[in-house]
Image (cartoon, rainbow, N blue to C red; front, top):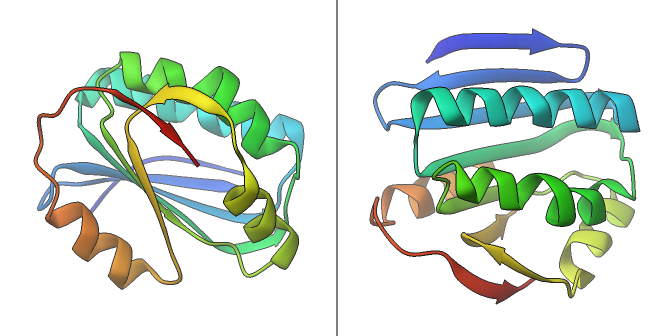
Length: 140
């Protein structure tokens, strides 16, 4: 994997073998950390035009609970517009974060999203997704 950016809270890599972005979030999530990280992910999404993103949240020490709502309203539609079609979300170990993700019932125009307990499951799922598919409306 090729390192694209590193910030306090996020390491962004491009997986040349699979052709997708890999976002490894870590530490304490705050609004500034998440917003800046998502801005960078959008920038690299536009640059690489990949249809897949693996968001690894295993190393988060403290979640930003409002982040899921903010992401579905602000960031994810922009990522979809930039070509993202599949999001593999690896759960944070924090129960609150997991509950917020699972209970989000927001209707958004977004690529197919799936959540996993570990990175290996997320990788397997992403590998099995077709690179070109239309955007669909899904409920989380």
